Length: 326
Image (cartoon, rainbow, N blue to C red; front, side):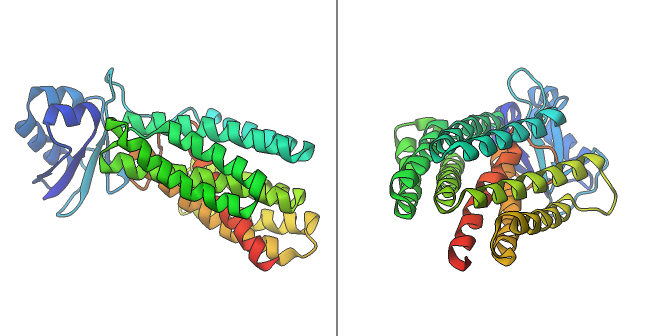
């Protein structure tokens, strides 16, 4: 039997978030679901998007025991979850990157303020995306975590960053106590994860700037080049070429360039760039899990700032590796 996972309106129509159903293809599984859950469920199927084990699928896609068939959703109003326009996705990341570069050149205070604004917009985008699949997360504790990460790191440095990360987890858990809609375990886990990434990533950018303005520039170069390479490769849909591998190679090339331009020694920034690239992929993974409920690393996921998920995740390892070896 295949495992059918349901979200939003389809979950309400079926009265359950998941069901085990027989069938050798997606079409047969969905036919069995219609028989079990009725006419309201059948009407919702017309606008749902089908994934099998994290990959886009059609009615003739083969499934077997243990396979997961996910219907992403229809949301209220009956429209399917779709990704933002491609140029908007990369355009917003480019605007944020440019703002961070300019703020970094002006002063630490400007950089800190820009990180808070960018992190707050990201938290809102992440929350809106998760809400589309009926898994609300607390945007308020995530924004608070980003702000605390910046302020504590600015004032107290590394101890402040550590305290902000602990506070992010505690704050997210306390917020769920007073917000009933955030009490389901999936919402709690998503909120805590987002708050921790927000606090650590934003704080890491500040303590990195306390070390060196040039190291911030090197990180922004690595992140921007890696994201651009992954985006361009995924849009081109080149057979046999993995966008994640391309992004990793691009990050190493950008790290080599950054180390040559801004570093006294090439190797620390190059190693930090490799760590940041891996963390960027992990951040994309976590972001897709929160936004779409699965590990869709190169497939469409909701939200206009989903590329920024990985950028925030990557800032911490980049700073941490440089702090240890440089």
